[in-house]
Each structure stands twice: as structure tokens, then as C-alpha cells.
Image 1 (tube, helix red, strand yellow):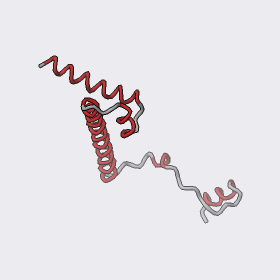
Image 2 (cartoon, one colour; image 1 turned 180 degrees about the vertical axis):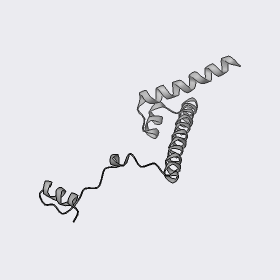
Image 3 (cartoon, rainbow, N blue to C red; image 1 turned 90 degrees about the vertical axis):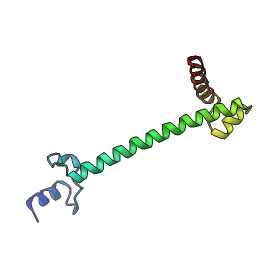
Image 4 (tube, rainbow, N blue to C red; image 1 turned 135 degrees about the vertical axis):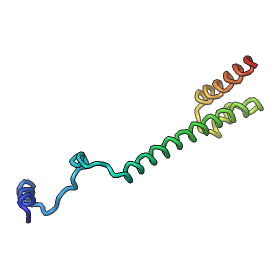
Amino acid sequence: MHAADREWQTRNGGADFRVATPMCEHVDMPPTEETVTTLRRAVRAKKNAEDRVEAARAALAVAMADAMRDGMKQSEVVEITGYNREHVRRLVGKVEEGRAKAAAES
């Protein structure tokens, strides 16, 4: 047994196990190219997922506005989407505002 292990056991009541070394103790280790590539790929995947979520939210807001224009009641939109009335009102209002602005510019 190494002296450091004996010292550790002495400090920790004779326990015969060691806790995993925290990553912060390895700060002097340079990252490998594979690690950097993997991290960059994960960051890109997260950004792409966030972009897709934002696009889906925008499409849902347009669909809600269209449904209400076609005569669907706000309460029905609330029931289908799970959003509360205020959130539906805000989202549909933004869509209608954008449509009005686009119509005024043409």
C-alpha cells in the first residue's frame, strides 16, 4: 500500500475505499481533439434543437391564430394546447400584430 493510501485511510477512519477524484483536480490536462470535437458537436446539436423548438412554437402560434380566425373559440384552443387563456391571447396577438404590420407594408 502506498504511503498516500495509508495516510488517506488514517484520516478517514480506516475506510478501505477512495472517492473518485474530482475533475477540477485535472485542470492541467489538455483536452484531446476527440473531446473538443464531441463537445462542439453537442453544443451544435443543442443549438439546432433550440432552433427547431422555436420554429415549432412559432408555427403553433400561427396555427392557433388561424384556428381562431376560422371560428374556433379561445377556450377550445386552450383545451387543445394546454396553454392558459392569457398565454393564448398573447401568442395570437403577436401573430395578428405581425400580420397587420405586413399588410400595412404591402
